Length: 323
Image 1: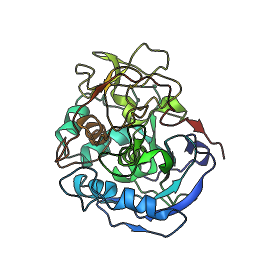
Image 2: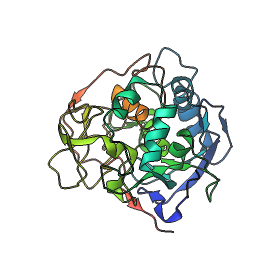
Image 3: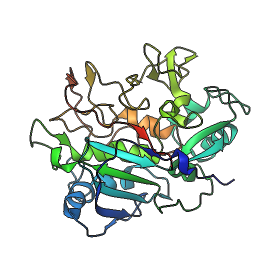
Image 4: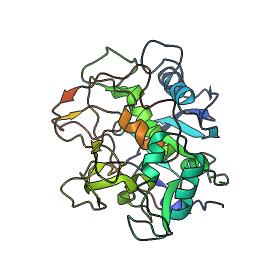
C-alpha cells in the first residue's frame, strides 16, 4: 500500500537563512554513513558522524548510535545543513496511511514489549481514536519502517536537519555552560524525521505519537488548550513524561518549561547539559514501529533536575511551509 507524499504538508520548523554545509547520504537505522564535503562540512561530520554520543565507545557518533541501537533495516536519507536561526530544526516529508494499517503493521514489525503493550490499548477497527478519522499522518521514514512502499520524495531526502553549530558544544562533555549539545540537538531532529511529532502542529491527521497522548487514565488528549498532556503506552495509567503544551514549540516534544528531567526530546534546550536518548524517547520510537536492543542506551545520561528560565531561544520556532 503506497504512501502519498504531500508536498503541502512538509513542515519547515523555523528554518531561515540556511547555508548547506554537507550531506549525510543514506542515514539509516542500521546504516553506513558518508559525508559530502561542503562549507563547514567538517563541523557536521565531526559532531554527527564521528564521536560517540556518550562514553565508553568514542568511535561511534550520533548516527552510529542509531545504527547500533535500532534494528530495523530501513534506509532513511537525511540532509544535514547549517542554520543561523534558533538552535536546531527539521523539515520532514509527511504521507498518509490508514489507522487500521498502522495497527496491523505495528503488530507485524514491532518486536519490543513496549510495542506489544501499546497495541493492547489501541482499538480495533478503522476509526482513529484520536481525531475520529480513518487515517494517520506519518513521516515517510516511519511509513517505510512500518512496511509501506514509499517512492522518492521531491528532494530525494526523507528530511532535512539544520544545526546552528555556533551556539553548540561540539563535544559530548565539558564545553561552555552557555552552549547546547550538538549531539542532543541532532538526536532530537533525527527522531522527528524518523516519525516523532504531533498532528497538533498542523498535519492533516493526527500522528502515531498522538495515539499515546493522555490527560488522565483512559482519557485521550488532543488539544492545545488542555492544562496538561502526557505520554503513556498503557491507556493513560502510567505517565511516562509530560508533553509540551506551549504554542511556541512542538506539541510532540516533552514538557520543559519548568522543573524537569533534561531529555533529548525536550521542547526547549538546556545549555550546559549533554542528554542522550532516554527511556522516554526509546519507548516513543518503539510504539511507532522502531525496534531497539533495550529501553536504555548502554551508557545513559545522568538525569538532571533543572528549572528552566526560558529567556533563551526555543529549540525551534515551528512554522509550516506550504509549497
